Length: 501
Image 1 (cartoon, rainbow, N blue to C red):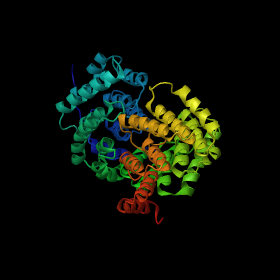
Image 2: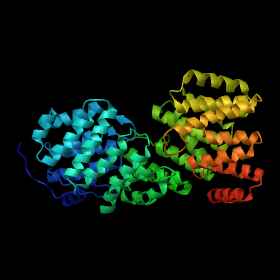
Image 3: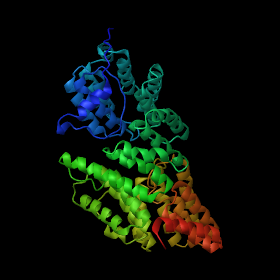
Image 4: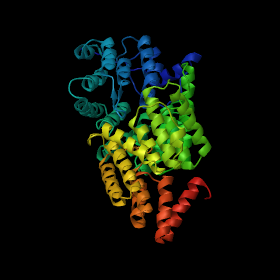
């Protein structure tokens, strides 16, 4: 197999791209050094594609890689890059057919691709995708791909891109489920890349993913502070910083990060002739930050914009799901039960039913609450869906409490708490629409079991640091127990978040 040893000076190529015509202006997405055999004309779009890929801007990255292919139809890594955009390892998404189609345009078989690749190193990059998109289950392929990236990184120790993508492959080996040991391994691979190149968007991004839980988040704060400036023109980069901020309860930073993310995303949508995203990942996190800060008018406006889109019938399934979660946060985190009747849409979703039934039960409407419970029992008849089981148990507990069976209510909520504690940690706003520790604390307060309530609220804060609903519970329970120091501490934390109370 012959190889042509041509490595274009990538920094000069990137500068030439930046100085090109206005419609090809290089965005501020970070900086990498990725020597390759592509032509000088292909370097600008290729480098932009890799930078976008590191910030999970997959659609734009694919466009950039296709531009690089047009500039150099024999550019092996341009086809590798496009194929990489169809694997979203932390989102549990992979389009194997599209990836293989991209690779096949370079050469129709793994053997043909290996023979055509101009360097051993680029052939090795292509070979990792024969594993990622090869035979076996997705879990098997993810694990084998992680090992392939480890071998590639070891073979080319000076290649920071190989090391960065190895870190991502480690994260992806769990299919989006948090395993602390695995995530620490990923951080250990990504951190030296960040140390060597503080402007590397992949390194800083993967460090944040490794640490975005309440236990490890302090280790990711420096990366979170850096990423926004590294890639100001990537909406996901602006949002990603808030993974650390949510895990630390830094609500001002959560709001600021997601305003930037929303604005960058919507500016790009406008360029593409699309409408603004008012019911999406960034806007849902922004809405949650507003709720935690007590910014009622902002939260209501965000909720109304999302509800209006869903009522129009033009929302896609993802936007409908975000509407359901935003509605839950709005009702549960404000405690305004009548909001469940005003924030409505024609939505067929168990979470929507749960919120309506929960609010009805809180208002003493046992009939609507029982009807909702019947729907949830039909939707989640077994234990296959843990979050669904938590909703079912919580609503059943509220109905039991309303019927005067407090002991049964507490028993059911302990079951819900046990399920919650058995699940891998999920970053961001509460994955369970109503955190079960919180509800256990609230029910315990109502039953006069103040010590149990205080313990439950404190445990809730382990999962959701500085969540204002749980902090209010700590204040009430601690004051009822005469624990003035605990009450004063929680009240001071609330005042820092909300202002004077």
